[in-house]
Image (tube, rainbow, N blue to C red; front, side):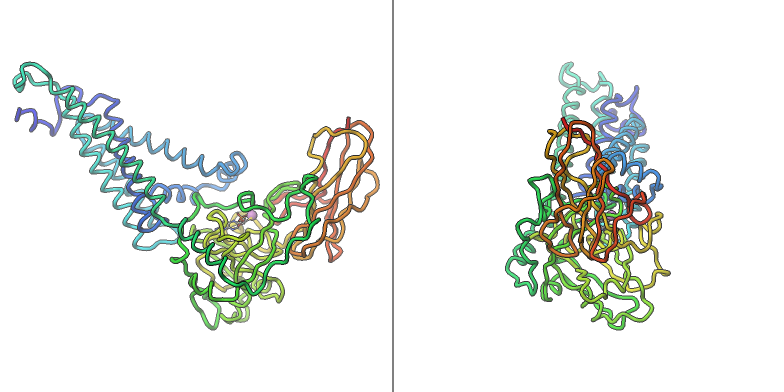
Length: 532
Ligand SMILES: Nc1nc2c(c(=O)[nH]1)N[C@H]1C(S)=C(S)[C@@H](COP(=O)(O)O)O[C@H]1N2
Ligand SMILES: [Mo]
């Protein structure tokens, strides 16, 4: 008996642990590391989850062609697909670690440790790093190595050929019962790892914090309320969007691998750089300031002609202009550079933010609740009239007043324009492309926008005929979209309808087709449909 026990190192006799259990030991050890790392991150610092930090790092160092490919091929599923892909790679490496350790545990422990060190490196090199972020990856490393060593020892014992001399029970092998110990411990590790991972999601406390902010917003008196949306501001019955986009339908664009989890009570943001009076805001500071509510249509520069990366909400926040005036912007500081907790950053022209009446917000509320996590909780920027990529920093945590020469924004580095005012645009929502509709009276309807100027005319033409003015919806303001509709008498056949909008400055949407990159798509939308 004593011989079998002390023989566990350096190598058991025979082939060692069979392949399947060996691989399972590797996978479970890494799963435990990931699960417990996630749990500890949830408690200590949600941003430091080792698995997600590795994913963020992969995105950060991916070549642009790859990220563009992922975005266009998978759309919003690109991040779940990346995480799933990472999981597959990690499971494969972990299984490999197990297989390399069928006899001795050292190769596997080394592989698990290397994974742990990679996760640690990813957390340390994250754009926003605090020493507390080290705890989760260190715990992951320790748990991973410990579970590997422990399960490996059990597995080696389970599959060691039974030494006849050691039998004390008259012939029953020790293997099978030890194997049930192995299965039991594996099951326990699986349950504990899954539980830990799920616990990590709960403990971060972001849901509670959002709930609290929503309640605070309901109690606070706003100094300015968004006027009620008039009846007739939208024609959803004709296929246009509703005027206000429900939060769950609001378009979403960001490079964050997972929604950053920060509690409002942990939020703070310095306003610094080329200012006379730098200061740092907390969330309570924002709540204590005059809060205003504004109806704003946000638009993404990546929106193709006819696309749906446009939505409208009532945003609640503090006047960004007032904050900048208090900070005292120095002459020559032409860029306000903001950074998100997930490391994304952009620059907004200072003169736009200081424009009286522009109405740029440091926003904390959206459509009667705290910002949804996907839309920037706890704090984001919203600037009427600028595409999101140069103005709408979500999860904002730093605001530096600087110059355009000093620092390029994230998308500027990837070929997009430095300044990007929104182009006057229109979109046809009805009829849908390639739809078949009854011949006779055919309704054509859609939306048009030119924030912050506002739309004064939308013209429609059928089959290349003369332009005709469409009926416009009740106007809400220059910072929002405006709906339009008209009717044509059509005979059966194939038809093409086109539109062009004109804004209150008299600028008419150009026929010139342009791709979204570098500063927004242009061209007249055209919809081909059939009447029967
Ligand atoms: N932190 C962060 N903020 C961001 C982005 C991002 O990738 N990360 N994308 C910007 C872009 S390109 C757009 S169009 C808007 C979209 O905001 P939404 O997702 O709330 O609609 O957010 C902007 N703010
Ligand atoms: Mo965007």
